[in-house]
Length: 126
Image 1 (tube, rainbow, N blue to C red):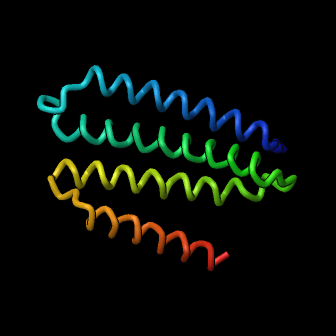
Image 2 (cartoon, rainbow, N blue to C red; image 1 turned 180 degrees about the vertical axis):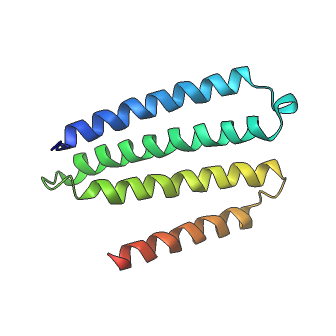
Protein backbone atom coordinates (compact mmCIF):
# COMPACT_ATOMS: atom_id res chain seq x y z
CA UNK A 1 0.00 0.00 0.00
CA UNK A 2 1.37 3.37 -1.04
CA UNK A 3 0.80 6.27 1.33
CA UNK A 4 1.17 9.79 0.02
CA UNK A 5 2.64 12.31 2.38
CA UNK A 6 2.14 16.04 2.16
CA UNK A 7 5.69 16.54 0.88
CA UNK A 8 5.14 13.94 -1.84
CA UNK A 9 1.92 15.64 -2.89
CA UNK A 10 3.53 19.08 -2.99
CA UNK A 11 6.54 17.79 -4.92
CA UNK A 12 4.26 16.08 -7.43
CA UNK A 13 2.17 19.22 -7.78
CA UNK A 14 5.29 21.33 -8.25
CA UNK A 15 6.74 19.01 -10.92
CA UNK A 16 3.36 18.82 -12.69
CA UNK A 17 3.04 22.60 -12.64
CA UNK A 18 6.52 23.03 -14.13
CA UNK A 19 5.76 20.46 -16.84
CA UNK A 20 2.50 22.25 -17.67
CA UNK A 21 4.30 25.60 -17.78
CA UNK A 22 6.94 24.25 -20.17
CA UNK A 23 4.18 22.68 -22.29
CA UNK A 24 2.27 25.96 -22.37
CA UNK A 25 5.41 27.85 -23.44
CA UNK A 26 5.98 25.23 -26.15
CA UNK A 27 2.40 25.63 -27.40
CA UNK A 28 2.68 29.41 -27.19
CA UNK A 29 5.78 29.62 -29.38
CA UNK A 30 5.34 26.66 -31.72
CA UNK A 31 1.66 26.53 -32.67
CA UNK A 32 0.14 29.10 -34.97
CA UNK A 33 -3.52 29.59 -33.99
CA UNK A 34 -4.43 30.70 -37.52
CA UNK A 35 -3.26 27.48 -39.16
CA UNK A 36 -3.81 24.95 -36.37
CA UNK A 37 -7.49 25.73 -35.92
CA UNK A 38 -9.42 24.70 -32.85
CA UNK A 39 -6.84 22.12 -31.74
CA UNK A 40 -4.18 24.79 -31.20
CA UNK A 41 -6.56 26.98 -29.23
CA UNK A 42 -7.71 24.06 -27.07
CA UNK A 43 -4.09 23.05 -26.36
CA UNK A 44 -3.22 26.63 -25.43
CA UNK A 45 -6.18 26.97 -23.06
CA UNK A 46 -5.75 23.49 -21.55
CA UNK A 47 -2.03 23.90 -20.81
CA UNK A 48 -2.60 27.38 -19.40
CA UNK A 49 -5.47 26.09 -17.24
CA UNK A 50 -3.43 23.19 -15.85
CA UNK A 51 -0.43 25.44 -15.17
CA UNK A 52 -2.53 28.08 -13.44
CA UNK A 53 -4.38 25.48 -11.35
CA UNK A 54 -1.10 24.09 -10.01
CA UNK A 55 0.35 27.56 -9.54
CA UNK A 56 -2.64 28.89 -7.60
CA UNK A 57 -2.83 25.72 -5.51
CA UNK A 58 0.83 25.92 -4.53
CA UNK A 59 0.72 29.67 -3.88
CA UNK A 60 -2.44 29.25 -1.79
CA UNK A 61 -0.84 26.46 0.23
CA UNK A 62 2.32 28.39 1.00
CA UNK A 63 0.43 31.59 1.83
CA UNK A 64 -1.90 29.75 4.21
CA UNK A 65 1.02 27.91 5.76
CA UNK A 66 2.90 31.18 6.29
CA UNK A 67 -0.08 33.20 7.54
CA UNK A 68 -1.95 30.63 9.66
CA UNK A 69 0.89 28.17 10.43
CA UNK A 70 -1.45 25.24 11.00
CA UNK A 71 -0.23 21.69 11.54
CA UNK A 72 -3.27 20.10 9.91
CA UNK A 73 -2.13 20.95 6.37
CA UNK A 74 -3.28 17.83 4.54
CA UNK A 75 -6.97 18.68 5.09
CA UNK A 76 -6.45 22.00 3.29
CA UNK A 77 -5.15 20.38 0.11
CA UNK A 78 -8.56 19.48 -1.33
CA UNK A 79 -10.02 22.94 -0.73
CA UNK A 80 -6.90 24.63 -2.07
CA UNK A 81 -6.96 22.50 -5.21
CA UNK A 82 -10.62 23.41 -5.76
CA UNK A 83 -9.84 27.09 -5.24
CA UNK A 84 -6.91 26.82 -7.65
CA UNK A 85 -9.30 25.42 -10.26
CA UNK A 86 -11.81 28.20 -9.62
CA UNK A 87 -9.17 30.96 -9.87
CA UNK A 88 -7.99 29.41 -13.12
CA UNK A 89 -11.55 29.33 -14.41
CA UNK A 90 -11.84 33.06 -13.71
CA UNK A 91 -8.72 33.86 -15.74
CA UNK A 92 -9.52 31.43 -18.56
CA UNK A 93 -13.09 32.73 -18.65
CA UNK A 94 -11.83 36.29 -18.97
CA UNK A 95 -9.42 35.19 -21.69
CA UNK A 96 -12.27 33.57 -23.63
CA UNK A 97 -14.50 36.60 -23.14
CA UNK A 98 -11.68 38.79 -24.44
CA UNK A 99 -11.25 36.53 -27.48
CA UNK A 100 -14.89 37.11 -28.42
CA UNK A 101 -14.66 40.82 -27.49
CA UNK A 102 -17.17 40.39 -24.66
CA UNK A 103 -14.86 41.35 -21.80
CA UNK A 104 -16.34 44.32 -20.00
CA UNK A 105 -16.21 45.28 -16.35
CA UNK A 106 -19.73 43.98 -15.76
CA UNK A 107 -19.13 40.67 -17.53
CA UNK A 108 -15.96 40.18 -15.48
CA UNK A 109 -17.88 40.99 -12.33
CA UNK A 110 -20.61 38.49 -13.24
CA UNK A 111 -18.01 35.80 -13.91
CA UNK A 112 -16.28 36.43 -10.59
CA UNK A 113 -19.63 36.47 -8.80
CA UNK A 114 -20.62 33.14 -10.39
CA UNK A 115 -17.31 31.55 -9.33
CA UNK A 116 -17.69 32.98 -5.80
CA UNK A 117 -21.20 31.52 -5.55
CA UNK A 118 -19.83 28.18 -6.67
CA UNK A 119 -17.15 28.35 -3.96
CA UNK A 120 -19.75 29.28 -1.33
CA UNK A 121 -21.79 26.27 -2.41
CA UNK A 122 -18.81 23.94 -2.00
CA UNK A 123 -17.89 25.48 1.36
CA UNK A 124 -21.41 25.05 2.73
CA UNK A 125 -21.64 21.47 1.46
CA UNK A 126 -18.63 20.35 3.50
